[in-house]
Image (cartoon, rainbow, N blue to C red; front, side):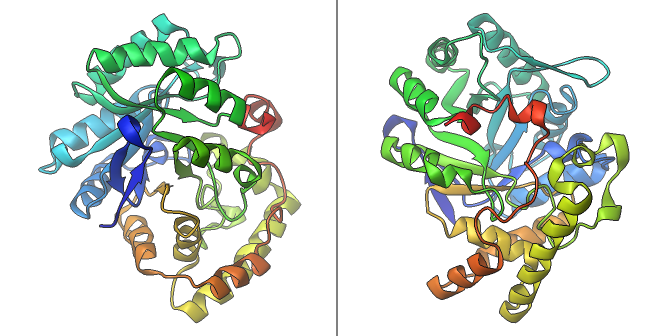
Length: 335
């Protein structure tokens, strides 16, 4: 398994070139199979994937408990590098209630995550979004206290804009920014990516297949109803979905000529954007994981990258990546 380094100096961490995003194993995209989810985590570790990404609010703690169970029963437990997002507040019915990144909340969330995961430390700990009521300096300072205490190894960010990133980095070294980045989600190229590179901050890119939209497998009939986040995402709706699937069909022709799958080309494109970028693949089944790992064998030349961008030019996606209420919570969308 190829390795990549996130961050620099005391914030540097070496991880696998692909990470496993575990959110879909906890119902965000409709029903999932617990046994297959655990088998997929085991298969990832066996294949050399070290980076496992989760959030304490995925399934209201379900995802962390699932990972904890998988790690407990894996012979590769010591190889796991666990990344946890915190701060999102949810009601018993699943409703999203906002964010809490106060220092005392940071420590409370961390205590529960350590218990659910069955770990004595978390490798990268990050606020899931910017709390508009709490200066980022206070949030990062609280995590830094947990670094000193040994409960956290490194500090990350998620969906933050350049100004916030710079302020956070003045408090403590930042290892990586987790943010959506794919062929059809390229806004970070406008400013945020340059800021991170200037500061020596790596990128863990989620949504590299745009939640399955550009995987080559998704169709409009795939939506699982109210339990599937994509049922409310603008890019998956009506004419937007039709226009986006047309982009996928153009990419499919290129992939066929290359002898690869659409998903492998999409992941390989993200890998080719820089050695400081680690794609997170959201596989919840072993066959999808194997397909994603195959992207590491796909080499794209400059001419091929240019061809891909002709098929799927920047800004070609129809619809926002989140509904309006969620877009408003993204500091990254404000610059």
